[in-house]
Every structure is written in structure tokens, then in C-alpha cells.
Image (cartoon, rainbow, N blue to C red; front, side):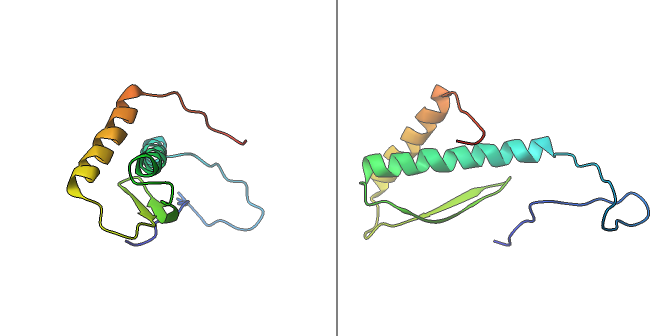
Length: 105
């Protein structure tokens, strides 16, 4: 997958120069989708550790508005039944609608 830019600039007229004042806005629909995928990756990691073991470590990831990818350490193939259990576990956690917090620690 191609990396997506974090910020987009739309210049309605003229050009932007160093020192110019600009107005920044947030694409809230895109931001919300990224937040959902970010949370889902955390839930997936928790479920992997619970059902496969504490050796599961994140090795990389991508979180975007359309999908997320989570790369992790696992020395052997995960059985289909275990994958179904993990999927059900993550879906159950999503349905429980736990409160979440945002901001700095």
C-alpha cells in the first residue's frame, strides 16, 4: 500500500508563502475512520496476546481511513479456529463499547 499524506493543503486562490496566515480544518469523517481503525488495532493486539500468547509483539502497522494492518511476531501458522475466536473476541470488545480517552498521558 502507498503511504497516505497526513496533511492536505487546498489553496483557493494565489499561493502560500512563508509567514502567511492560513486556516486549518480537520476532515472529521476521515479522522473518525482513522480513530476507529487505530482502536481496532489495539483490540486486535490484546486479543492476540490473550489467545496466542505474550510473545506476540507488534512488528509494524498501518492505520488509515479505509483499513488497518497489524504486523506481529508469531513463529507458526495460527489455526483457523483460533483466528475465528480472535475475530469474535475483537468484535465482542467493539460491541461492549468501552469508553475511551484521547490526549496526552
